[in-house]
Length: 371
Ligand code: NAD
Ligand code: DAU
Image (cartoon, rainbow, N blue to C red; front, top):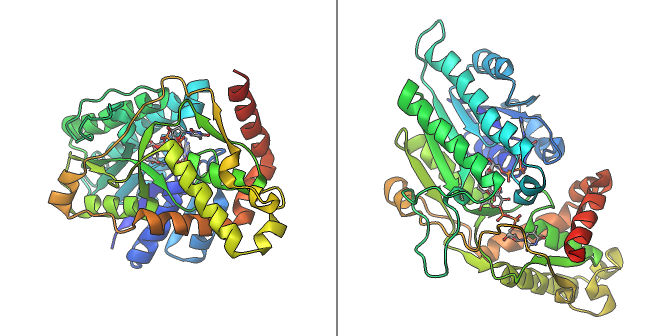
């Protein structure tokens, strides 16, 4: 039986990971920590709270004393560290929070882990610190470049990816210097339930329902490698159970799409949903389908993201060879499940939009359109 501390548990991947772990390992105890920033949503893990094996703690990873207290009181033996500022556009308009949380917060987690697991009164305790990172630390690829491997040199291009790269290096240093038992995963773009609607896929889904523009940055030819969020959780599980200490592992979906193609695909799938369920036209009267138009009529090219990485692609051969990792969700089933989840859980995203987020997103769009 393991006792996990999952940071960022009320965020997109953290929440999905909590559900995955509680389902997969019913004998384990999971403490979910989250500062509930704009991206954190207590509602996302409400159903986990009915499970006595789960406890939610509202707190900040930068609070080292709190982390040490949790590690001791809950006898934590495994940290899965998701908490971060995660949105590239926000890191461009306001990098400070990314430096504070992603670098300072990760360092505070490492200091707490060292104090309790390595230097506590009981001596060295059994432990694992798993750090969740991103493929963005490797920079950008040209159209014919081979995908990123674990030995691709780091070349982060945004304040977000630079802050994640710095946190990866700190995790590595705590292993080499102090012997902290760490593993790190670098994953490609995730999609699935509970993703905050500032990210491309949920933004496009919700904007279609409301008949709002679908903003395509630049020429829309940038490429991302999309992975269903539960496949990320499966990869992390394998790394925690079987990964070699001090190693990094890539997790990806072998599923490269240009942004414009993925937006066109979502438009087509949403048109099909409207055609199959006539009540949707009454429920969403501003959607193009309700006016007899196609969703892709909303596509609008806007100013590009500064320093926009052209292409990400993951080579997960090491993770596959060592840990038998393989994504189980096909893109067809994953995107279908995701659309169904957003349609079935309007309350979840509508409350986010009502909480003044719609104003923020409208302003972002206006700024990009104007320039
Ligand atoms: P998210 O923004 O949805 O969630 C982040 C969570 O961290 C939020 O709940 C937020 O409240 C919490 N948080 C932020 N600052 C905190 C602090 N100081 N203390 C405690 N909690 C804090 O992000 P996500 O998409 O779920 O990403 C989770 C992790 O996975 C991040 O480390 C990200 O870099 C990494 N990652 C994400 C993707 C992706 O496609 N989304 C891909 C690869 C890696
Ligand atoms: O690759 C992993 C990374 O994926 C994670 O580390 C990040 O936390 C996560 O946010 C994600 O980063 P991206 O920048 O790739 O995701 P985002 O959803 O913001 O954008 C995906 C692509 O779509 C990107 O090329 C920018 C483009 N885009 C995005 C938005 C929100 C648009 O063209 N229009 C938009 O409105």
